[in-house]
Image (cartoon, rainbow, N blue to C red; front, side, top):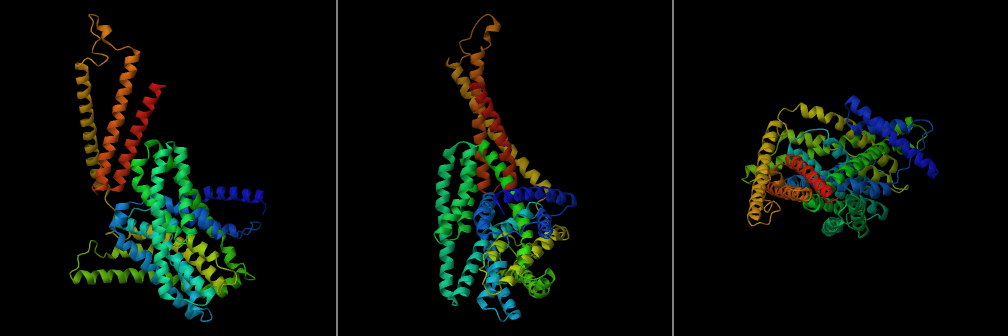
Length: 531
């Protein structure tokens, strides 16, 4: 297609996003379900051009900003608290799924080399950050479940991609060395984290110097791409580098961003993430034509690939359940042996986390990146699409119903959250009241010393006791400067409670948003009076 046709097609996709998003809302479907289904339908409309999705474009242009945004919004305290469960899924479950799928596919297709079947396993093993984020925005889950699913989706892409590259290299070279591969895995992972920490440290110092929201938004957008590209260029994990940078930025954003910058930046990223997610889900649906393009007809493709693809899909789902159940049995055994564990196994949590393993962007990009001569490429591409289709359309659509069917799996009650928020707001109000009392006392002391503009305004005429326009303007500016200082004191108090684990993330965000609005209003009054 020409550049003009490509632009017109992009506009058409954006129009389709709006229509499908509205349809999902009307039909009460997960947006990802409607978007992928719409993409599949578009793929077979006569006249729609064949879409060859460039996997490098997805990995460089789409994935970094989505990862940075998810990491930025991740609750670091929860991530640290449930780190063992997150690591178990992000590394253990991914490796176990890779091995299981590889063995099943080699049993079905013994003509394929082991490395090729393991490549397929690595492609379909990591649940997707984009799909997880899209789902978690629509359901209310206990804090542990949300934290584990979010944290897993941020880290497992790295482990899945590293395993995929090892299997790809082994297939192309015909050799594989397990100790060497494990050493490279550690190097790639730790190197990506180190790069992300260095870039995050530099970004925190640069962004707070930018001042305006336009520069900060541009800087954060560049930061996502730079973190990924630099780490990937050095041979490390671009995914882990971007996630690490995003976690650092999210942890420090309360101190380095003003209220105006924070609100505008969040608004920009919310729209950007919606557009990127929507386009990616539609592209996943459109890629079905690519999965079947080598066959003379759709019927032939389905006949040849149906059985192995169904087996791969079932294996992926069963492997995740098996890993979760095995982990619970291990934790239970450790408890019986006297080990002290922070979190006990929970059957409802196991069911939900196991069923919430949706695949998406990374699976599609990895499958499309295979060389045309790769053994079993058609099967791998069809299996990747089948896994995405089933996990997003079926598992993603039925997860809200499954949550409602488990009575014991309830999030923190609204009344409890309201009580916590009321308690914190009372403390915030007390801090601000104490600040204003101290400020008023210092003002009266200044007046007693004759430094106040009103102190010398003594006259027998009561009308002359009122300040003139300039004095009133000065008093107004001083008042709103005091308001700004009181807001900063209140924010510091709430942030201290949050960092100590005394305030939940939701309550922290709600109160900070109110404080941000107070700060913006006070700054506007000061700037208007100074103008």
